[in-house]
Image (cartoon, rainbow, N blue to C red):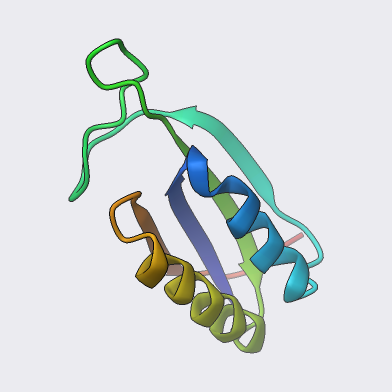
Length: 95
């Protein structure tokens, strides 16, 4: 089991959520209006850097992780300038 941290530009929200629904993921948590900087433009929600990110946390079995990762990589390839990161962590247990 893995914990997926998916950080993405808010402009990709519908595409990311569609990918989650297509993989029939049971549950998730969304953090909205996250600020930060990475390989794309800064996301600060200001007049100078108006973009913001969202973060999605999903605890999933490895088979669903692989399916969702594949779908998210396809989104990233089409929208590489928007920013989308996937961080996978080992999940010891989920209650």
